[in-house]
Length: 208
Image 1 (tube, rainbow, N blue to C red):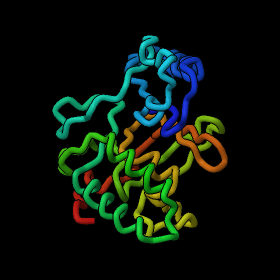
Image 2: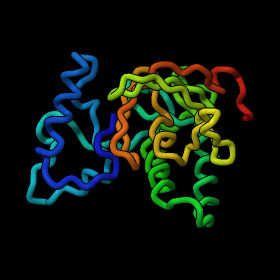
Image 3: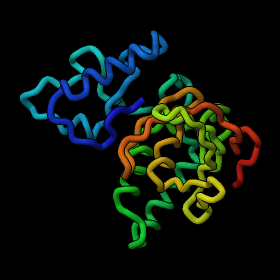
Image 4: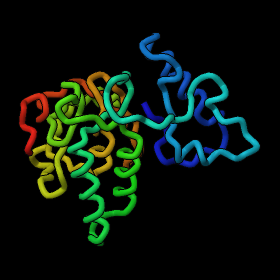
């Protein structure tokens, strides 16, 4: 789980209590060092402050090797095919003035920290492109079903959410049971992946 994605943090105490609380809420289901803060947030600490990963609750992100030989719960997983398509999408969208740069930057950051593995080795419970996923809103306890799609296929009337939408970027690469926090225009969304109803890789639809 990643806390405070791409946010400026001015003091370790601002994040320590929330990370502690999440660890205790998991009732031993995760080690403290499974709860990460992303690199952009880590870099925002003043040099005079002790960063929170020295307090025993979190650690800085380490480079993720390709391949799935040592996949762990909490890894962000993206197939090599999805990464190639999404990097091409980012490149082409940057010349389109209708696409917000911060949305492209957020997706780029997620791809940069993901574990990239061959398409035919993606675990069956990972949210990949064109997956249909059931999410629980951890604040309202309501359930939502979305299909994660490319921008040209997005249609909220059909619950097809674009990968460039904040929630779309947020859920890419997470797995069954993972909790996600992500800033959206209305505030902070807290979601949990309850079920991956359809995944192209699991269905053998590899050329979608």
